[in-house]
Image (tube, rainbow, N blue to C red):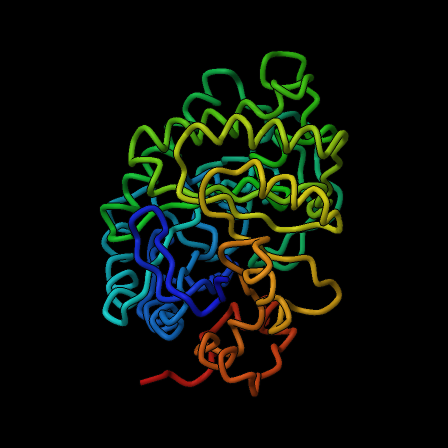
Length: 355
């Protein structure tokens, strides 16, 4: 029987344990041109004892940015600025994947240069507001992507993935969850297309499959993970036939030889079990623990065989040495809600560095 503290071979990457750090937006790329800062190297280096670190969402293109001060991987300056971050993690024996996140209709023109506006599957605005440097603003109606622009978006993911490897990342995770662009295509309210990129289940999953296929061809499937969140309504997403959509998507992704599938679980544990059974490689689970943060109790899911790795979010913010604390049963610092939801985004604050 495996435990969360056993090592793990992630498609050739040797993980010290089965505890993953989940991706969490931090908005600390204060450098010119959305470049990472030295503080980000400190932040990720502090948490290198995780078996696997998945970074905050990184935009693969200028128009893919949806929040202030989030980093990119679409310029050579960004590639160079990420190298000290990956080096800091590797120096402490860690493994780090870059999460590529195109926010789609989630964003605002004030966050974009040169008169750009957010883009989406269809010209349908999300309900709600987005945080900007000028305060909260209503989501705008996005510009519907044309066939040619969809092809360009797929190419942007490929370029960003290659840039990630050049920056020293061990791999890439494609963000297909939480109401961002790929999830928008999977939905029925954000995607009202009648062409081959919408309508049927095969049409709605097409962008996810084509991005994953193109990136796997570019950098190797063993360097690629994919994140999903079935039934998650975040960012005004509505989905129908959730089980059928995601079982079909997973069936299309399975032959690509990806390193892992990363599931942000909803309340349907039965679907989790079916996806786990259908997936041929590593299964990373961010378990449903609402309203509590994922804690020590989740480790048993590795022992039960439901997951190969367990992803922890907020608890990693408050406890940089989380694997040690989990092994010792605590004590655990309590995550500060203001910090977790972005209260520190205008200046760098964090827990003490670990030596």
